[in-house]
Image (tube, rainbow over all chains, first blue to last red; front, side, top):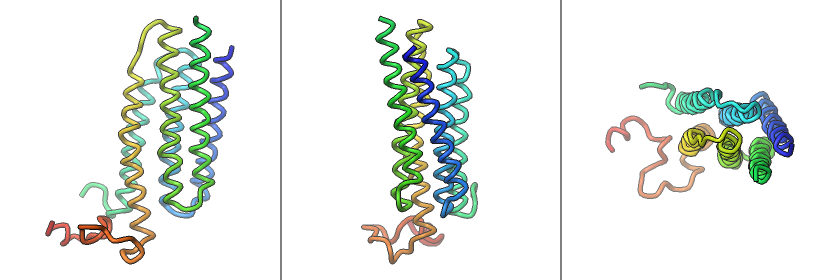
Length: 90
Length: 123
């Protein structure tokens, strides 16, 4: 019982965080903020996927969370590197 | 006994949710870009860590087998969050600062993002 409410609370927190990240992506002042908001969005997505796995009592979503973690890291580094060097693979 | 584990898992989930919320809220709330780097890279990473600990405990208690592969995601995030933070800070320095507005770079000649190609070749 208490576990159900805790899972819903965590869902609400990470969902609200995701909405705030979308707001920052839309209204960011500079490109650095936008990269940061997209990176935070990836991390919040991992948390939401793992929470959904806990909620339905399944471990099948672990691989999806792992792949999203790796892709998020690679895409953030690629975007930042493109801004720094004007090129991704030199 | 199972009830105490439920309370423990609920505690980790609530702490994780609060840290995740604080991390995303700090991204809006803090004033300049270097401060805004702190909130998502530290607080949100801890939030995801809490969710993953809760997931490990939940699978150990309710399904009676210990699955530690959530630790892989935790390890990966804890390794990569400082690297992404470093890259975003470098983007900020590269786009909004000049060598004159920054403090001196110590024993090196200038900050790494302002090095030109021929200086790279010398070193």
